[in-house]
Image (cartoon, rainbow, N blue to C red; front, side, top):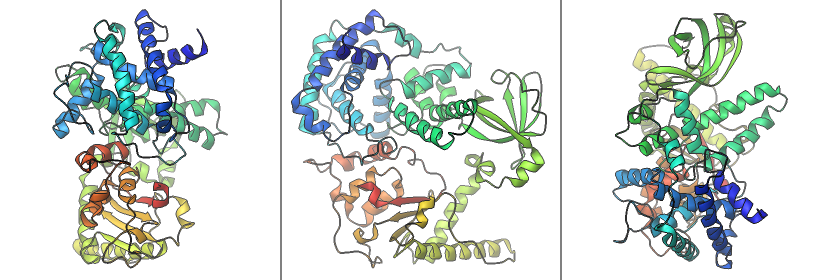
Length: 544
């Protein structure tokens, strides 16, 4: 096999859970080579010029995998289209559906969207160094490429071969109750299936960071860290499509009539934290979470036994997840020391907040703080400052007021002094930019958010730093920035007349972005779309 064909073959097999090529794979590899040759056309060079590197063999295999999905009734594309229609009342984002659209067949609009989606995901700011560029779904190059690729699919459609082996792998038997069998398929779905394989880029990027940070650790411990990282992405990471997690997508692929649909949808949050080993019984290994007093019984189907050197009372860091009403070990485990000594020294929020998602008090506190912030800031959730230190002083005084109000509410005396508002969640580099201008926004769903280098561009009556000119690119950059909250985006669009600037480059349809705004926010802000209480720091210079 020549090098050119080999690269396409390798790209194709990377989307499949088996290593040995079958006759059905060779059929689709042949189609992928034809598609790859089309992608090499000079007409599309300007489209690919925006990227450091686009693997045309991978893109070809990606598009042909959609063709295989439809032909073989694999259910990945159908699950996305059904969920999009359930959320938005239309089958696809960004493209108008014509009367020639048939749900169970291949469609021009599907291929056009997939090209746009692939090129957009290849610019995830966490996995690439260069600033991302907006891709116009209606760009002539995308539509021309779609036309030629779709012509190949139409030519092959009537005699295309079904991949029964892949369908059997995906369609798990309904009587399976082993979490590890389910997890293996979710892991494949996120890291190897064509529709979600972009999570592999994320895994590679994060693995490099982990290896650099812990380069002096023993090899065995580094392997455990990488396993924990992969497990976390498998069970906790939101995908680019609709910000759904892997287990949610797998449930939709199997279908609502499948016996595993509800158990998959009910998979709990993957947790990793410090527990105390208490002992074992016939069916479970017993742990306790001292900050909450909660008992965690992990089934011995997942953790057969404990190392005999780990005695009751030992603190372990362990990953676990709930499946079919039982806790399963998932990820890594490491032992540290005795409970008394460890938790006396452990002041981290990680230990205290292991089950914070089940505690509504955090949400109530945010709501109460938001109300007080409005009262304290003249009814506005946003404030503007010459420097971060000025903003820090403002928040410090606000927190003093908050402490005073809470003590008054609880009828408790106390010292009004609070430490400067420089929590661990803010990157250390903030001290280096302490003189930069700063927008402070109180997101009523997540807490306080800081945005630097943005004051001169925001036309707020209370913003003395506004330079009198809106940057037309800013609204779309806010939409794209993964660390700028949806709350601030919606606030800015409503308050500052930014909606008219929501346009893709070269776009003539002024309704394209507004009509698909929520879909785009889920894609660009997949990890922050469903907010949790925290502090955000956003530098607008990183948006461009």
